[in-house]
Length: 269
Image (cartoon, rainbow, N blue to C red; front, side, top):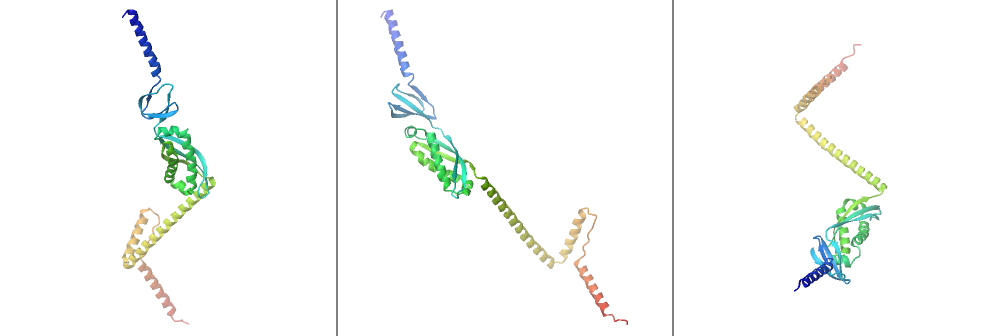
């Protein structure tokens, strides 16, 4: 082979290699671990490419990539009415994940917008079946009901709703004032019940103390001495001396005898 033919063959080889590179270069694609590529050939679905390296036939095949991670969608504030006819404003957050990439591309045009629209309808329906107290106190149960309703609608689209939570609930100002008054009344009722229970308990203790004193009169004198000690410990300028009840009774008896003696004396005239 002559040198001229060799160089010609080498140039042809490089030309073919360059041409193959131009053709195959755009067809080499890489899919991340958290992605899937839905591949169409001449408008017909053919396969779902897994993570890694894969090929697309130029001008015959194209792809739509989807993120398989859990994504969040914000449901804007919606005004709805509870079962007891209270208008409230509420918004929610949805956690959803694509489980079937092919359905998510073929069955629905915009997955995110479709999920939000379903959530808006489900939110109004579910809230309409619950009272205001249930909406405020049992949000976890309502969130489960919302997730079930939304997931039932999104299942044909290859979307799994993992969690739904109500982010904020706004109620009318008049209802807020009524709830505040109700809470204040409940607190007042609770305080009165506690006070009444304390008085009943104190009365029982006083009854027990009186029975003890009746059984042992000496305990009353000990209590008097204790009170004198407590008064003196306060550094008061006035000292209270408490006389035993026997002294009081004896003085009363002497006074009665003296009065009766005076009445029995004859009149000197």
